[in-house]
Image (cartoon, rainbow, N blue to C red; front, side):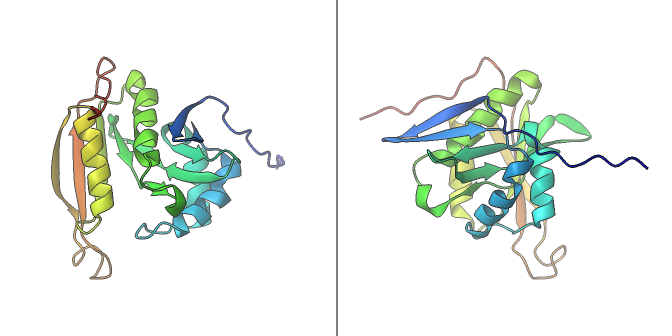
Length: 194
């Protein structure tokens, strides 16, 4: 048996920049080098479910082309969205979770990451976006409703996983949000300044 020595993947260099005041955040595809820092970031973002480090490493490698990482000016991850195309419906992108560090919440990092994902993936055939949100997670609801409004897309919701039936009463319900279609020719509307 031939065994190859593990090599780190270089960080993806292409990306987008998000500006908030005098702060600049780089948005890029994650790599295996980011897995451990992503795991630490998610731990700082309740009420998100904490995955194993191994799951975060897989998200940063197997799903790097459909996921996104936000770094601050020092290269520290402050935002992460793992996402993947549904195997049976490759036109649908499923957003697993949106992690934004507490110190950069409220300045548009989460929305900018979602928009950058759509900019990258709509030209590659993604037309619909799905995610699940617990009914008590008002911040996530507001984020996705703002995204859908900016892209002027319709959305539906339905119960996907019941807190009682699926989670044995140890987790809130998870409601599925399904939005689209998204098209290359549609760009997000900008907010009017008063």
